[in-house]
Image 1 (cartoon, rainbow, N blue to C red):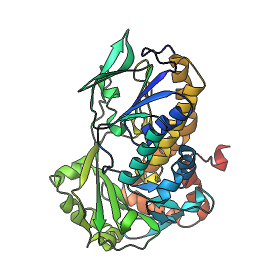
Image 2: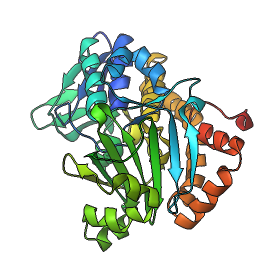
Image 3: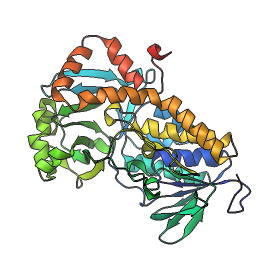
Length: 387
């Protein structure tokens, strides 16, 4: 690639400092690339997320140089995830299935993202916080960087790591998603929850599902997805939704009926799952949730974000042509994520249908093999049936 900024090394511009953006930035900086990372917010900040870190993420943290920092934040170690149908029947998935003899980690996005961003600064990434991108720089129909409210930034390759919002992708003409927002996500940290330590619990209810686990300082994180039509039914009143919809799940009522939020509920619209446009324009690539959004009930969203950052970094390191980088990234992304997203599409049919989820939980509770197969199929570790 010929650098438009006259750098000796190709210039990489990443917008969005979540786990996908920062992991890609750190890896590329460690490989000798000149990287600029632009973030709209000031870190640390709260983010709508299940805040469940699957144990496979620890290998990524180690490669990125932040493993000790993550464990030093006193997050909650999670030994199992338990799925509850509305009647309180359950089935569990041990965390050790994903990484031998390991537990998952409950840690707030405020802490996790902050540690990753600080590491990016340490390895030489140029980090610009509180900087909002307002447009793209286009030359001969190719993306050559971005415009912010204050300045313009030119780059050889621009990366959209802005999450589900896909901010850069939506600035390309005719690229804005035409999918109607069908779901709404809510999240808050809570006190006074009634749940044992060392577990993550998933509750299914009419029109959606939610997750609960402890993060640092004994705080509970409750994050749930629900159909937008139900949100409208209750005029967006989250307390009414909790008491009249979510508490129809017996276990959710037991754990959450005395809980109190520590800050106002966060809410965001969700426009769909699966792979999005990985290459919305020449010299523009999408990673993390901007490239593909996996169902939260898998507990593998942050894993997939960091994996996509690693896949792109490898594609960039191995080539010096934006066109070849794009082709290799699309191929590697498809190879790594296609199967798990396909499995999630099937499981999603049950996740939003309470009667069907009762049958699924009853069936999976009978024997371990199908549980283990489905759990592993939502991860990068291949199931024996896919070999």
